[in-house]
Amino acid sequence: MGHARCLAMIKLILDLFFLVCVFSSYFINTFSYMSNYHIGIYQIVKRNKYLKTSLYKEVAVTFRNFDSIMCGNDMLPEAKDVCAHRENFEDAGILYFTFSTLAHFLVFYSIFGMLGIFCKGSSLGVAKADVVHYLYPILHASALAMYLGVCRIFVLSPPNGYSTLVYGPEIEEGLIVMIVAQVISIISAGVFAISKKALRREVRIRPKAKKPKEILRKRTSSD
Image (cartoon, rainbow, N blue to C red; front, side):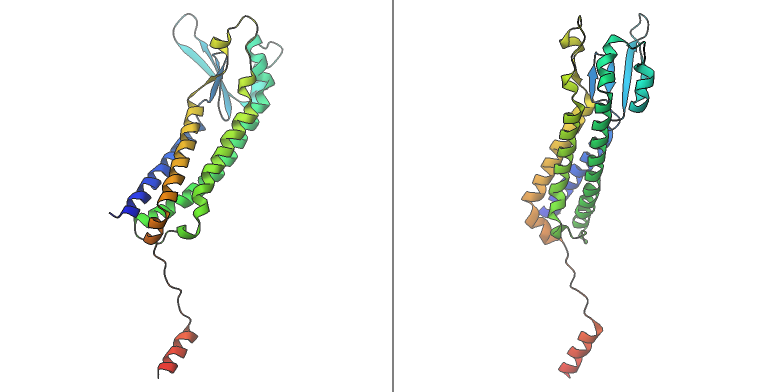
């Protein structure tokens, strides 16, 4: 296996890992607040201990339904900040989902290009579309930055009587997965940048088919 094909395989694996990480982040909580409110891309999970046991009960509520269920007249004190920032959480999730989905399309293009190189076939013009391999890390970085900026989770502070260290905002697995996806995308772009010349040599550029008139002219001129 040639050097370029090895690099193409590495980039292909990195791109696949990126897709898995981003897709997983849609279904994993990104932050927690007051130790029992867990915020994700499209929902908030309320987790409480079940009576005096070590078991927990969870109630998953979408952002649209959170106000009517958790933010009524009998709202708990610890839910006040969550209710006030509910729209921020929802907008942040929409922005992240939209921009990361756009990045997905570019990654699919990149994957098909790398498959073409690995199989020694055509690669959807990968030699002419270098920007694709650099654009999707930028798109995902923008999605991550907008999510953190709009979500504003770290401006929340627990009510009086609650310790910030125990009940303040905490990072959960979802955000870690997002950051890992961003690191993978940067490494993938770096692999392509380093190996660009080698990858281009593996791309089979087919000559353009000659028109019938040109063929006849050559035949008549040779006669």
